[in-house]
Length: 253
Image (cartoon, rainbow, N blue to C red; front, side, top):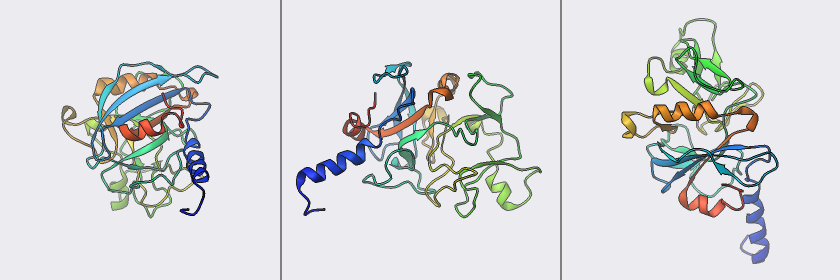
């Protein structure tokens, strides 16, 4: 590319970045901003826009969250896959950066929890977690990064390893972030990272995560109560420098 005219290079890169803009039908967005690539801290905000509008309105006061213990790495979402920098991998302790749909409409994988009912909009799918609910983190499985419900209590080591967490308060309520999403029609990319959620933070926010985005319990409940699948919500997680870099091209708040 070094022999290409400078203006052509600028055009190519601006075209790549512009493809990552928020989808036109998205009217609800959670923004997460981390100070640096290696930070496990983030500031979160919620915004909405009206149909046909380009401007965003902040709906909630910003709140604090925790990220992966090793910071951020580019994930697999609806942003370009050729972003410069570290890529998210299974077990790397990093939260996926980029633009991601919240929930999976094709699989009805949105909110999960231990409570029989939660405060939510009627259109938000909610699944009560049982001992037969699995979330597959095995990269070699065709069910990688998918929720599956088995008809019996887990018996094999594989089933027990995939069992969604039981009796863990931090996971008593969570919302799926569609990073590297696997579905019944599409297999997730092997070893690119799995099981990414918003959930309750540990130790009152003193502990980082393995890759999820966590926050205070009451804040999570409040956020989930307002998530509206009809508004095609997305989660954008970036460093402060990348947010500044891509804000205009990606049409971020």
